[in-house]
Image 1 (cartoon, rainbow, N blue to C red):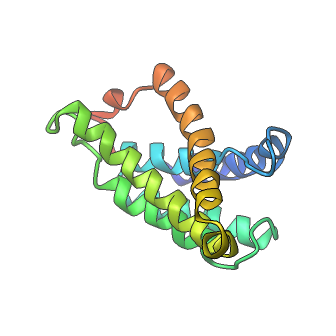
Image 2 (image 1 turned 135 degrees about the horizontal axis):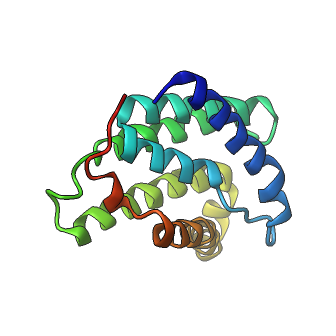
Length: 163
């Protein structure tokens, strides 16, 4: 991927997240379009681009004062980029069920850590409400990923190039 296409794409995804996710918010639960973009970027182009995309988008999120904990977004998005980048080119080697369980597990872990840090008071006081919040936050984003899977499935990235 060329940098002159990559950077404007990152800024576009950030703007979509910043404005569109707020409109789609349901009881303070928003879809995370940036994690979807990082997941797709990592699976298509590999760990390097995934970590770079995750760090830049996380830094933009932290600097825009959307997140309340500075550095949390950069860390969690970089984590998605690195771990999901390990799945690059593995679709034809894994059983498709295991491949899909792997990226679902990555996203689940990301949202668990993010919700644990962000809603720690809820984890300490009411674990059931914390699990509901984590599940709904994960589910809202996963709904968009599943819709996107119908349009652009990961199987198209089997032989993706990293140039």
